[in-house]
Length: 117
Image (cartoon, rainbow, N blue to C red; front, top):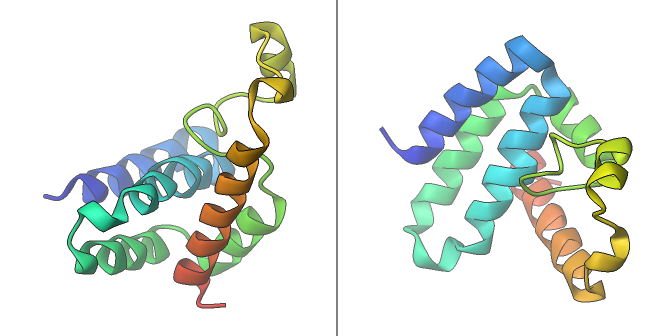
C-alpha cells in the first residue's frame, strides 16, 4: 500500500471524527500539497493516482468549497484556528512573503489537478 493510500484512509477517519473540513485540510492542504512540492522526485503516475484517490475520498462539492474557503495550509493549517495561532505566538509576520506565494501557487496547482478547472 502506497503512503498516499494510507493518508486517504486516515482522511476518512478524520472525517468521521472531526468533519469533512478537517479531512480536506489534512488530505489536500497538508498531504497533497506536500506531495506536489516534491513531485519531481516521484514517479509521474503517482500524482494522478493520488489525485484520483482524493477524488474518491472527498466529494467534488467539498473539494470546491475547500479551495474556495481555505485560508491556511500545511500541518498546522487544518488543526489550528485563529485563537490557537494567537496562543502559540505564531503570527503572519513569521512567514516570508514568498511562503504565501508558494502556498498560493501550490493550492492553485492542486485545484487544477483535483478539479480539472
